[in-house]
Length: 288
Image (spheres, rainbow, N blue to C red):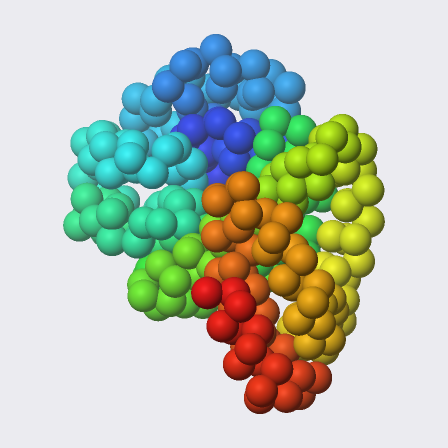
């Protein structure tokens, strides 16, 4: 299957990264738009794209596949405005890339014959993202199945995988992504704060912890969660856990975080059968 020519509306972090990755993969981009037109025009010039501006003025400027990569709160408004351009979207596939919103938010375009879908990348993007950041990631697909073949081809060209989900599955997957990505960031920030509580420089603490984090992630990828688990709770080391709790007694937020994650870790350790029922019970009592 040939990749369709593409329009991108919104060139923030995701839209910018997507445009560069599509271009690098040899997928034709017909037009780029952004609320601040000069941002779209600059990117268009960099990627040799002929059509750009603040918003398409007619359907002749639109590709066969239209990505709406604006903030979640702006998607419906953009879709409504886009629907005013023409009465016939039957030859178009329109997708948004929000993890939180369903494809149905594009209903205005569906009512005019368009195929609609959500195409959410399970990846984090920054101003420094590269086309390679799309390789081996997953896009969740939700919406009209007629849109899926084109989107699967785009994902394939980017070196990515796809996962078809229901609306409910999509919502839960997005919560999971926040836990796995955003909250991992927060957890590591808390770990550095803990290490720095006795005067160790935060930068040194972060540098010392990162190899551990990377190895842990690799172990999780290669093994089950319970087999990849290590540390005092898996060993049933009540004395060490008690000492940790005492060290954090003057840091209530860090203490609460340690306790709730510790309780979850006890349940994981029980699955690995590394601690007995009595030790697990004592550990849970200590962590409450």
